[in-house]
Amino acid sequence: MVLDHVSFVLNRGEAAALVGENGAGKTTLIRILSQIFKPDYGFFTLDGVRSDISSSDIKNKTGILFSGDGGLYDRLSAEENIKYYAELNSISKSSYNRMLEILVQELSLSEFLHDRVSTFSRGMKQRTAIARTLITDPDFIILDEPSTGLDVIAAESVKKIIYRLKQNGKTLLFSSHSTDEIFSCADRIIIIHNGKINCDMQRESYEALYGRDLTCFIKE
Image 1 (spheres, rainbow, N blue to C red):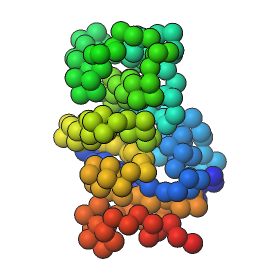
Image 2 (cartoon, rainbow, N blue to C red):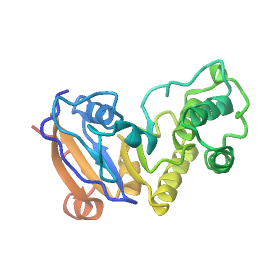
Image 3 (tube, one colour):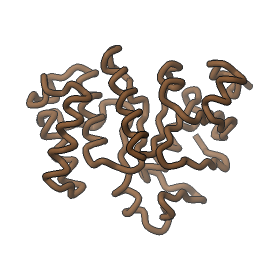
């Protein structure tokens, strides 16, 4: 999908839901923000740092959860996957231990923390991938369909984690097909359709005008 003059601003401590039908451009946008794709023109900034000038500084402050299997290593345990990612990002032992303790509790990882990923269900892999994303305590967090494969209890845990991150001043962009997740977690709703931003509105204002109908801005 080709993006067409996509532009928006995320404020510190804010969670924005990226909404759109399949093929609308959500994945392309996420891959640009994660710097997997390089745009033909344009750039984005994080804390005043431009992506086309100092991409490494932005990567160090960004945590990304991609949809799918999360790219975990099957031969490693959940903890080994999480620790390996922390080491790649030069996270100190004390920070790692502190964050791991928090995430194990929030995501109920203790029951399978030392088991090989090859034995995991889809939901267990998703919880591990979320923990790996957050272990570096990033300032900017991108979550691509974070509740995919999760049961009701685990999905509720994700909502609580998003709330905690916002309270800690983190900035989040998450995509979701769950109306409940969007209206429970988002401060802003950004709707993308055919590669363009058709709506960028505070969630309370959106809900007052359109209720929970997310199709208003994606109809031809």
